[in-house]
Length: 503
Image 1 (tube, rainbow, N blue to C red):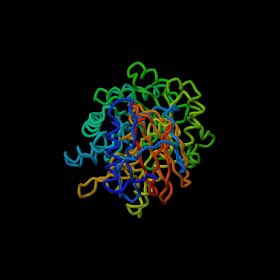
Image 2 (tube, rainbow, N blue to C red):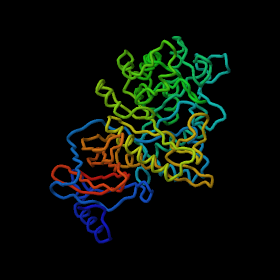
Image 3 (spheres, rainbow, N blue to C red):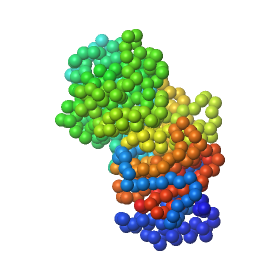
Image 4 (spheres, helix red, strand yellow):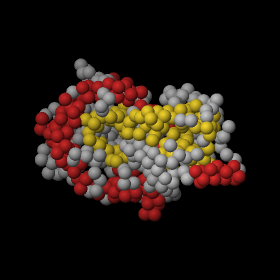
């Protein structure tokens, strides 16, 4: 059985096989070996490229992952995170040289992991470095601005927009989704960004739709066109802990979308609307906070896609904080003409968890549920939360104080890459925008059963990327079969690997 090759001679033999086959040298060629990148839970290997593994004719007696490029599923948009206000603050506290190096590690498809999707807050979120929360049209309490005379994205021009433009330079295929955590306070009951609802008035619905359109047009003019837009982050999170949030029932989201949809079609046709933007299932805390006499709307995305607003909705966005990824397949089966996007999850830790445990726990949970779980359940994107945080998990203003980012800035000015950098990297670096998920046998479950779990994609250039996770704590051997050829491999316990070959 061929596993990890040992010794320079063995490695050289396989490399010679690859060279003699002309792998990747011409379209339509077929590799005689797969390249392999591995990340282990002990950090001994971090997206480390091992020696290639050779295909051979025939089958194997090992547990076999059968890859079938002829059976296709969803087309992929990209993989990434969010340059929140906090992330922008962290990145701008680096020296210019460090910042450029970090941006390249994140966005450059060759020297970095090639982040290809960003979900950007429209205004303030809990990850805000400012002393107070903000939107792009704030007026004193008691005042209104229905004509949006005070609208401005100037807040973002100093730090956020330059980073977004640089990201798009490093990866021209980068897609951007935008999501508000709250409408301006003057549009809401309670006149506050934290909690409350959108006022149930036609003029307010129209003003909010116009506000979102103004944002899209302003960002486009600033060099960052918006590909996707949702109208509210986590619309059932009625009592956010000190950060912007809005209780937006289905009927209110639908009213906004029915106004916003025609406006986007006219003024920004590239921008598609995503509905819901919340958990796989309604969180028990959100159910418990439902106002007396109201429906908790545990079927929120189903109701939204069953109404007249659906004609303007490209699909549904999901988060990871309640339920499991199978909810995405259930919705896809009910509405197969609507897409699924996975748009937020953050690693987190307890106050006394050591860094090694945080890395291990985040790597294996995200590998199982996010990297493989979401994509095997129709997700077109895989997006984590903050792209960069400081070593205290901030700065933040309310909300999560145990979240982790893809990269971390430390007090001495150094920058480290974290588990989410590698979980996203095992997808983003090898699965290009426009890739199509293809059929593959997978034995692992998102709930953990200790087996080999995987997902496969065919890239636009014809290459195949297979992402594999060994859920077990012990090494596990398996085989990969494509057509009439097979290779065998062994992964350490908990490891995540990506195999790439030309089909």
